[in-house]
Length: 134
Image (cartoon, rainbow, N blue to C red; front, side, top):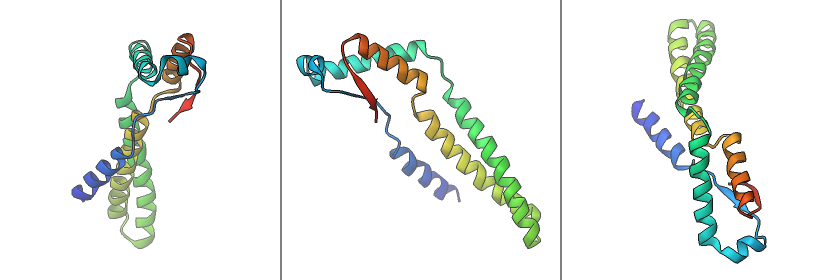
């Protein structure tokens, strides 16, 4: 069980690349070039990290707790039907906690809307035109 769980986490995290802004190819971007644009994105990201408060650990813990509780309830209900309420609750709780942990890790790896807005504004002030995030 532990090996499967760890393998799922590794595969999931490999697919969770950090998002960054996508810039419209306006006159400013064409004038300064991709290297300078990437440098400005990194600068704006550092500024955002220093000004925007975040607590990614709370998202992970919260997702794990909610998933575990929900899984225990569903597992207990299924266990009650099959005659093994305790085993069903434990199995459901473990599955729900695992699911909640993975979801929490994913959410914690994504930039918040405030962070994105901060970076977008910083880039606009530098002359860029951010059109979204990927």
